[in-house]
Image (cartoon, rainbow, N blue to C red; front, top):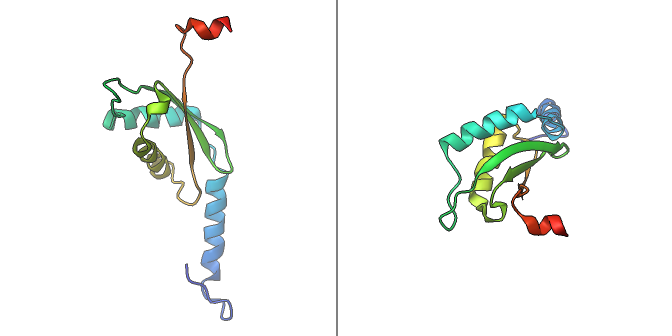
Length: 121
């Protein structure tokens, strides 16, 4: 954005950009809307299989704003490729019109109900 401080050219656009950035920075998105978007996105382009095993995203939720931070619970979270994470972040940016703020995506593994070792500890 070009601005001329002495003549005041472009100052009106600066405040619009600041308001947009603040709106994106403090944005809150409902979990239902996030999960509807996630399931549609996965149906269009599923995550790649790693070592012959599929990564299964379960749900997506926003844990905080400033900056918008999302948690994706899925199986084999440690194997999720960075390229697919970028695909999801860019999809969030487009679908919810959040172009002016950084988006954080944390991928976590869900609890395994069949893992007996962790229950004994």
